[in-house]
Length: 179
Image 1 (tube, rainbow, N blue to C red):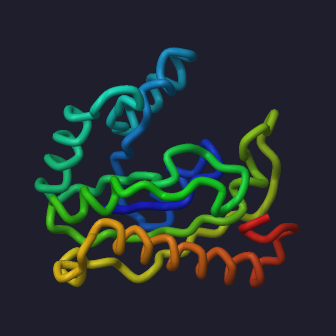
Image 2: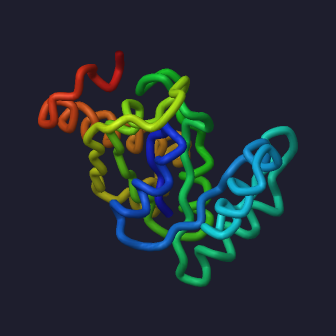
């Protein structure tokens, strides 16, 4: 189970290249229907459509089946593309899937995609992009917690934030991840 921060439409590609394996991302169903090309590409890449307005039971079953078969599922806990890190608190879905499937949750921090094709972009800009694989989060380590999902999500947020801060310092991006 892979989960990353989310700035731009190119984030799924950057995450897959960073972890070097095929990933089936959960994608909200509102992404579909505006472009036949985008719809075809998204389905070809193996996206699992997920409703934002009703319980996504079918999507969750598909994701759990993929994980049980040894595949990798990706999810963006922020739920939407954000302007800056920390703008939208992470949801617990990635932690739930990892815990339910009994697989590690692998945080991946991505920096720079906000400059390439972030929210409000009218095209694709040229800028460095960095992907950092953080230490995995093992659901069993949180079994004694009062709220294991909340604690796993908090650790995910902490690891992503630290990796983003280090990336922004190292690569000299024009803004910090929380601007």
